[in-house]
Length: 103
Image (cartoon, rainbow, N blue to C red; front, side):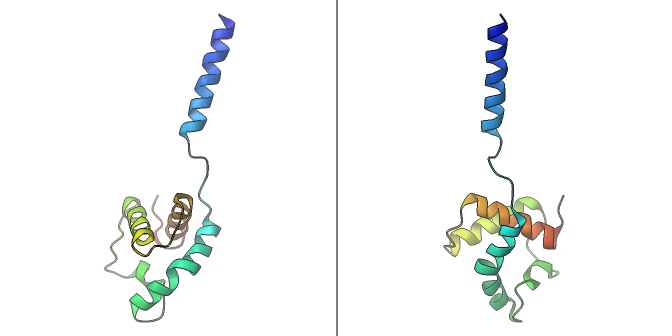
């Protein structure tokens, strides 16, 4: 009986570990990626040479965390940025911390 309880507890811990993300967002990496992969395009789009304005303009498209994730993923795909899912998560974390402040 004791062995079965230990086995069940071990299985529960293992499944919880596997189900949780193996990484947490790295805001510093997100900032680096933003400068390398995003800023220049956004600076050109703004017409003012400032890539940050796109995030703070009154008519911005991103109004919630889900939309932010979607937009980062869309840019990655459309612009062929070759970002891994972890990189996208890092970018989302950076943009949220720096500009959006979603909870």
